[in-house]
Image 1 (tube, rainbow over the protein chains, first blue to last red):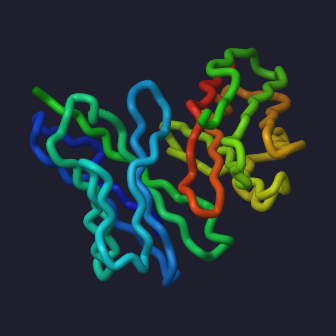
Image 2 (cartoon, rainbow over the protein chains, first blue to last red):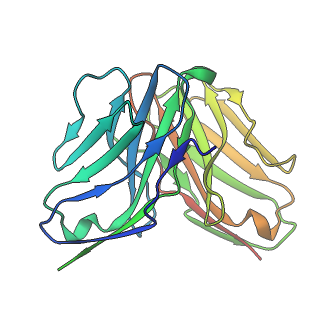
Length: 116
Length: 112
């Protein structure tokens, strides 16, 4: 079974609108972390936001927020007030405590296109 | 503070040649990771180090691949001999205990 599933290969959003990128995960570990990374067309990987499995509140970082629903095993990324510069590939990743808690497993990504 | 630095940014070489990719982690980070990204397989962890010691190399595809970390500020990933199927973007990332992984800009490798 896939540990991280991103079901949206591509998404479109209009500038200034909000968009939600889906991520579901599969783990039996009680302690884990969830990450989102952005990869623009230039290729670098940029860390956006982190959510720990025991965090009581949803993580937020500026225009990024993580809609964490533990029972559903989902960790969707919400980008508010989309900008043209948000056009990029977005990856969800998970770190499990098993194996030392340092390995990241990545999803297949969602290509986001922000339109005028 | 400088980020993770990888070199070269691009490498084009012929099949059978030795390829060496280099990485300088963020100062103070004691974990270093090597990843490979391809269209077919996405982002895969190849190997990671903690305090210069290889901890998990289960992702290294075969014996043609080797990685070293002789000191806290330098690591190499070597492919010998290289094959066309090794063409990919190779990322290095580093972290300390309290931080997420920070990635370098990657090396785009093409094996002809």
